[in-house]
Amino acid sequence: MRMAFHRDWLVLLACSAALAAQPVDFSTLEGKVLAGYQGWFNCPGDGDPRDSWRSWARGVPAPDTLTVDMYPDLSDFDPSDLCLVPGLTIRGKPAYLYSAWNPKVVDKHFEWMKQYGLDGVLVQRFVTSIGHKRSTGDVLLRNILAAAHKHGRAIAIEYDVTGFDPERFFEVMREDWQYLVEEVGVTRHPCYLKHNGKPVLSVWGMGLEDPRHPPRQPEAALRVVKWFRQESPPACRVTYMGGVPARWRTLTGDAQRDPGWSEVYAAMDVIQPWTVGRYRDLEAADRWFEEQLAPDLAATRERNQLYMPVVFPGFSWHNLKRDTEPNRIPRLGGRFLRRQAENALKAGARMLKIAMFDEVNESTAIYKLAARRQDAPDQGFWLTLDADGEDLPSDFYLKLAGEIAAMFHAAGRD
Image 1: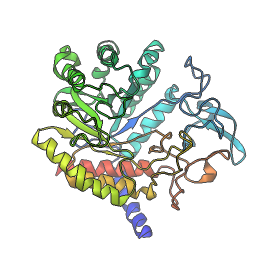
Image 2: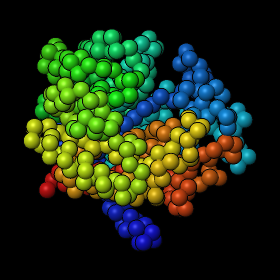
Image 3: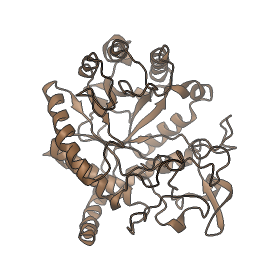
Image 4: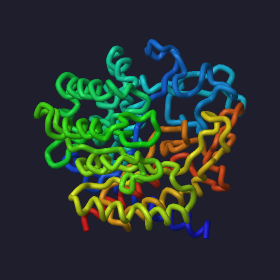
């Protein structure tokens, strides 16, 4: 069965390559397959005043300081555009990491998106870091805007409210969105994604039971949705996407229980439930399809809402949380991600989010990754693509994402 699977994929992935260069329609969410883009990686000397190995490690990268489980395949980059990591080697040679403050790095990521046929990304904008981003010139965002334009990939902002002051998070988001629209001009960018004539904006995290996600009152959340959709200045009004709990419809599990949250979800234009970690194998993914995905889609159809399922390739955060087991949710050589995408199509979804493009911290990244253990640094724990006994190329998940995108594009034309 395993060999048959990979023979089939050789054919499918070859076919998807022919579709990779197709232009993106920036006027609609229909048929879109987007990935989340963190871009939160820094290196000392990259120009960021924090002058740190941000998101790679707690301090200098070493076996006991790493906060990532997967190592990016950096063979497409010139070493002069990378950051030499003291004390880490790969087969005895110097090991490197990258900073997303380097425009050449972000440009290469978007080049890959075009090459493999991914429509674009939801650009993660953490409310906790807005002050720093703006005080330092929004370097990452400007790199993204330039790369998206060069390679013709769709972008949309996705605010993440995790960890911010419940009393101020809305004020900060509201002011920042006006700054992005009026001063930076993000929604005038030719590749900014729109739907029904309005720019798409996602706000992730409201409604989750975890107290780190404000607000705790549904009335406060409803004010956020209404302002972005209809009460803001006309140029700032959006097609509102909610990054909501996986069990948003039933107000159980990871969702807050107050029945007022149902009104909040009903006010959104697009529902995007966070499913990372909510199931761990193929059988559980199929149960999720039956018990959650199909009923969710039916509920949103009744309210004329759009529904964007979230799928993920696997999960591991052993270096970030040392008390957790490595390879917590195995990738199964791509079968886990593909099954989720097939289930979303079978349920009738017309768009999809892949979590994430570049998050090696939780091992959900789909960009080029170290394929074999010997391709990652000699020191420390690294989860490589051969962890489940598969012999895969470093770009396998980009190819798979491109094939998934082709499937959704074809479904949209039917």
